[in-house]
Image (cartoon, rainbow, N blue to C red; front, side, top):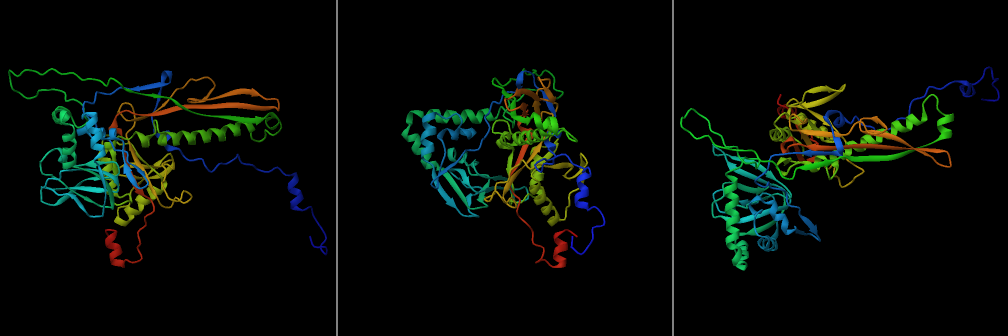
Length: 485
């Protein structure tokens, strides 16, 4: 206060020392809505173990081959070739010799690797990049029937037969390919003449087995239908998997420590122990959702069957890409799960095409939908970026789930009724006081996640979140045409 002014009242700065302040409970920015935990149906698990019984799969499914790069050289373990169903029954020595015969080649964009109507006579494994598979449609136009990416393969039938190829395959990005020619395969069989018959038998058995199973690899159920009389009714049975997968409950644990002096003297207006517990539980729940998505043992990202994985066509997630994902998980799809940046990238693609998605309310929050299926935001789907501090660009994945035991979908697993339970499957136990008067509480959450059938979960990979359209170079009429106006 200036010296020339006489103080005529108590100042606000000292008066507030006598006033009660209005306080909030502690806030934490890392808390998210965690919609996945709310949308998953939770199953009570007795004994900490959940067994998923399935029908027996007679024909092994194609799996991606893990390619490793060391000093710029691509390689893979020889046993990985058994991920190719046609090669799954080959003798071990043949597999080992085949793996050594693979050559690595770099191929530019737009190169045709296989031409329809001609014999390819070469087996390809994609170490890096993407290729598209084209086939002539009924009206003579080239139709894209598949998009293959890292770890996937093609040409396995061409390398063991002389039939002309019925597809055209070309690169849509610069690619690094590992190739095995028919000449190299013949050289392997010449080196192992005593196994040549075993090789042929293994291939023939695979082809024969394919005729007896459905597209999921399960043996067909023999049936008869129609009005014909004197037809013998076939006999059949459904076999079960001899080694069903079992899920053991995982746990997240921590110890909360609170000094008794703090909880005794500073408990108003907020209970210190309760606030410490509440904030710690929020952190536990955040970690739970992250584990449900990213755990190597049971996380959704790592539980997707290879046949249920597709890649974006142009990087950015387009309506076509989500339609393709819906075509995979077409039996009662429940919701998409995507990073908020991926959802924003999809909305930009919709805006560019003039097809803005509709919005619904989910737990009181507006969420966009595509084809009637909500896109649920979740920041636990990680973005792979060269600069981890900047997630404005990079690639991520979009999941699509069917949920519930009745629909053979995805379910969450927990065990309620544990000792010291304060929430379903979450316990808090007093561990005691130390000599300094600090009380310790053990918090434990038990949970897991199970995919009941392979077609309950699909993923759209290589989703680029940093692509933006430039509207400035478009005239008014061009802009309207682009939006479909």
